Amino acid sequence: MQDYDLVLSNFSVIDESDTLRIERYQTVNPLSDLSLVKLVVKMPFRGCCLAVKHEIIKDAMPFPVGVFMHDNWIGLIAKLKGYNIIYVDEPLIKYRRHNENVSDLNSPNSFLFKIYYRLVLLFKLYNHIYSRKS
Image (cartoon, rainbow, N blue to C red; front, side, top):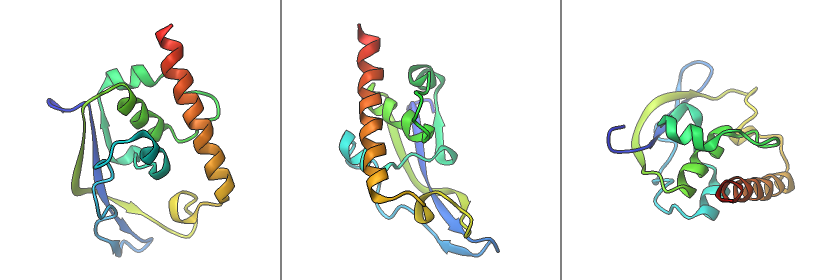
């Protein structure tokens, strides 16, 4: 954290019995291409895998109404504001997946909703960044 403003780490996936299912969730660096569009499509920022300096949180606040993935909001603000971001490939946590999970693989959201949400997110990011410049 002395050299970076935001650190994102990889993680392992375990099941409800603590059996290792995926040793490394990310097989490639999700930040290797930091283009905004790819980050919005992939949504790689998971709060449990982030270490963030307070300045980023101050820049990201307030969280806009309708943005429910606050960890990605924080990561995208850090990208847009030019903060120094790094990815650690070593899994630093074990992420428990089970049949009741709502996120990622078991998301009940339709493909159209995911597109809609990402468009709303882009709009709110634009509004957040440019409303502060004026």
